[in-house]
Amino acid sequence: MRIAEVTTYVLKLSGPQAYLGKLEDGSELSEDRGYVVREPWRSLYSGRFETMLVRVTAEDGTTGWGEALAPVGPEVPAAIVDRMLAGWLTGREITGVRPLWLGLRDLMRERGHLVGHQADALAAVDIALWDLYGKLTGLPVADLLGGAVRTHVPAYISGLARSTDAERAALAADWVTKGATLVKLALGKGIEADLATFDAVAEAVPAMRIAVDAHWAYRIGEAVELGQELDRRKALFFEAPLVPEDVDGHAELAGRIRTPVAVGEAMRNRYEFADWLGRRALRLAQPDVARTGITEAMSIAELASAHHVPVACHHSVGLGIALAAGIHVCAASADTPFFEYQPDTVPVAQSILRTPLTAGPTGFAVPAGPGLGIDVDTDLITKLAKEN
Figure 1 (cartoon, rainbow, N blue to C red):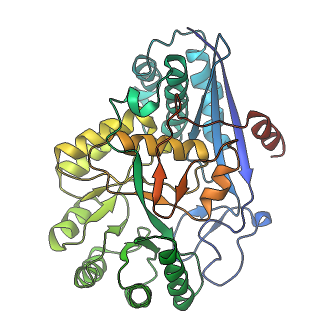
Figure 2 (cartoon, rainbow, N blue to C red; figure 1 turned 120 degrees about the vertical axis):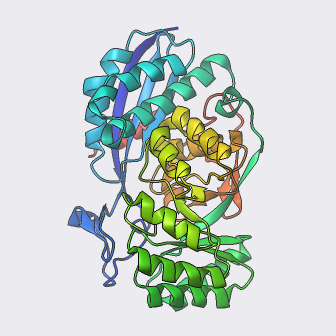
């Protein structure tokens, strides 16, 4: 069976509220503001849920869907697929995913493009190829990866997107009534402020395990101070404490605190993870499958396993395709204690699927159908892409 067509779709969807809620000054991140920096963090954010989808069609009409995590500028990875990947892929026979992935990877490998937008574009195509090959063989992706070791992937609630600690604590308490037992706080706002938020939530829900995402905000001394306070509070993990280039700083921090240092969303390939793992700079690996693709995510999971490091896949604004891909990787990986559940993202993610994924604050059911096991609404996606 040969590849007949590769099609990209840029989507920018509205949700009940922007990802991670209001800005620090209390104002709304509205759709007409364009991209803004969410102070005190450094990265650009959009008021909409932006993504890039890929559809790979075989000559018999069977389709596979993929998605790149592209929260800003999804037009960029779309252009890479259209201009550099699609032409090479079209007309090639699909006897499996890895031979095609190896060829696609090598197109720009020697020019240093295994990271950034090129990697994001490749991730989307890779996911689409796994979905397509699963449909052609009649097997779920998790089975193609060697078999699922679990049919249910546990989750932690991510964000608590409210403006005050009292509101965050109340929201956490509400999640507990729905079965949630784990939560991650979106912090990095100063040591005292971060601890105040942690303590307010812990007081409201003493049985809930709490993690902290610092959004790369701290220097090593500050991170050690905060990390040691998190040790005393028995935090679940400490995510993105230092700038993402500081491997040595993360290694020093990991050696000075008990709370697991969690890193991974900024990385795209096994070579990056191998460096961090070899230097013992992380204790919880967080690859995002919509940035690595399924093929590379499984290689990362095996590397992490060899270093006795669990994998907890990252998920932020990806839609239903990225979500399904992450669930299948988690299902097929040996040591994956939990997956990220984004309350603001999941309803938007489900909107492009004819049949929603089984997802909630306690976790995700592994889709059982062939490929990713999802039914993508092609007509709706085509319509939404034309509106951008």
